[in-house]
Image 1 (tube, rainbow, N blue to C red):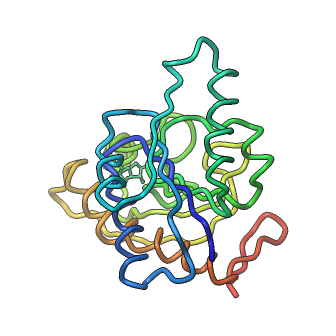
Image 2: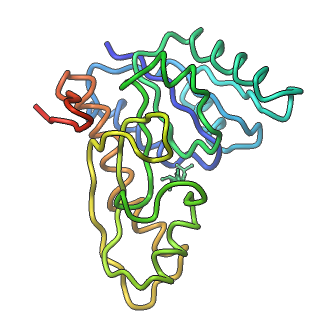
Image 3: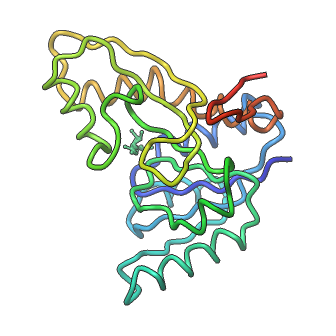
Length: 207
Ligand code: GAR
């Protein structure tokens, strides 16, 4: 059984997709053991509560230094004994010690086809604003392992989504979620839970 801890900052629609997929059996061999948010008002925490999943908030704002936060944050994650950590709209920089301890055991969902529209400053709606202002015709989402860079780790799954003529950033964001994110994040977890993802030379192989 794969023990999964999900880290969230906002609405938690990706978390919900994972909760639903575990419930429906679309993700097998998996238990969501906890949800952690940096934001006590994140609706994602409500979603966890409603599904009876252990949840807590730990915010950098409650600590004098980033080092103190990082230490407590790592402890909170360790206490939940995850086999896999899922970043589902988590907007805090992951402490280097956590990346080292959980190498190839942290995944992130990013709302673009990496390496387009990713890296520092590209998150949430900003990604879709940038895509529309560049005028690209195809966008999408990526699930990747997290390494020490920003959106640079090995890519696990990607799915493309068409841009429509009258899209606004909000409409495009919703389509990318519906057609890509909510599908490939649960799928990636299911593949990992069933031993089907291997990392070789900085790239993944799906078995
Ligand atoms: C999602 O679109 C996710 O891909 C994005 O934040 C949103 C969270 O929505 N993540 C990033 O931009 C990370 N760089 P949700 O809280 O409803 O799942």
